[in-house]
Image (cartoon, rainbow, N blue to C red; front, side):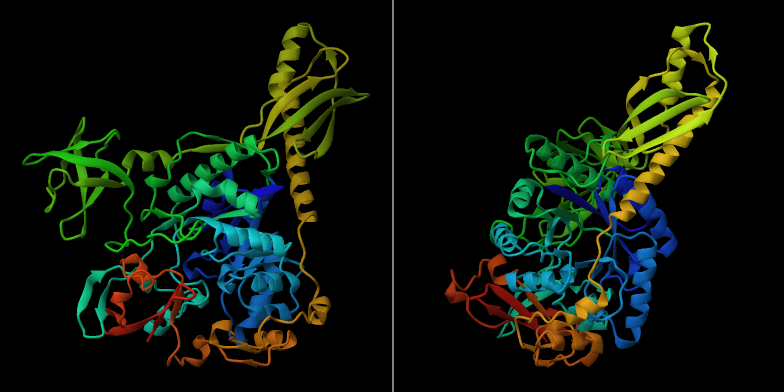
Length: 607
């Protein structure tokens, strides 16, 4: 079974580095209709990235995963044709109205925005033609096992990155507050804002805290369990993150997966090539809000109530304070320019910069207020690590066998890679017996084993020429360059020939698999007539249009989440029924009512 490490690509440059650092696949924003409107890329850039990735048989997916209004559907379909022609392997979509359109034969993946949280939903997605379903972030290991047993579709799950506190595709809070819809790629992230928690009598229970801001997700300790549960694609969140994040996190998970696969022969990587890293990956050294494994193994505390900012890596406690210096009990090496932070006695995150270091004693750019002996410091900007990541940090090479043999009028070089792709390149030349046979043999092996910045590495070289010949270095170099270029082209062509396909339009329109509900409300996210036609064809009798179209928020949940604020604050009604009573969130002029469904263990936010 192949396992895929799926990395984010904000742009062409980050996509290439993700491949270099071990990604088996990338997901990148298209010029339009992506769920991260600030991370779009041109068709030309995406085409360059597909060619680069396909050399390693790494795949490229594009996000066309926003909800569409009627006037946008045709443009989205044209875009999908352009992406397919650019070599893209699959499109990640949310709007099911696209299944009513004449799409190119591009493989389709059901975005996590389609709220893939139940066996019925995932099974339906499989039956209507999706090759892969991206699971809701809240999916537990046990649920993954059940989904695998009930379906055959590929299952993709997140393993690292920022968490949406709401069920994906079921959040309308940003749309309600300022008209920026998360389902349309414009979320303003109100969940990261500070709120007051107020009871029915107007008493403030929590003041100015980030009550909906979750820690970042990390499943690093659960990869084996996830693979055994049926997950084949491990997704890193972060199309808005910087290059350092992409390099560091991709390399970290590449090493974890390779180590796991070296001990478990059942699994193998989904792409080709071996990575060599010139740094030590560390998840804590790039942007993070602290980590949680969320609901993988059950409910736990998971919020960062006092800040929505990056904490970085735990450094150590302050052991001494002088007028202009701070001494820290740490094993980490500090560097001038490092950014440090701590929580003040009021619970506020305070940051400062290191100006000078001598051993474990540092001089800050200013002595921060609230710092005391015993205070725990964090480093949220590791200057030395960041500088290291700005340079060349990884190399990825595909092992090949090279055989040199003679022909009646010259030479032939045969290259065969680890995947079995084989090419033969001949060149005409005059062959003169070498005056120094040993030196001639060494020169042929040396010149033909150079691979430079190509994706290849000569693992085995064999000279089958009947005798040593004197051959100019320029001739050997030309033969090698031709062979490596042809091998690369053969690999890219082979990859494109093996792309997955979605069912043709006629077959999709004949598909009448019944949906598991016959009445749909606004949470079905129907914004266009194509989506309405799709659901009617699958047996839905009544449906509402989505909130982005109706703007009718009265009595409707603006967010539905498995995260429970009562549980987080030690007020779970199952364990503490004495804390019962209405609760509200206040932020600026907005006031929201919290509704708790203890049977489902869910929380809703209503206007």
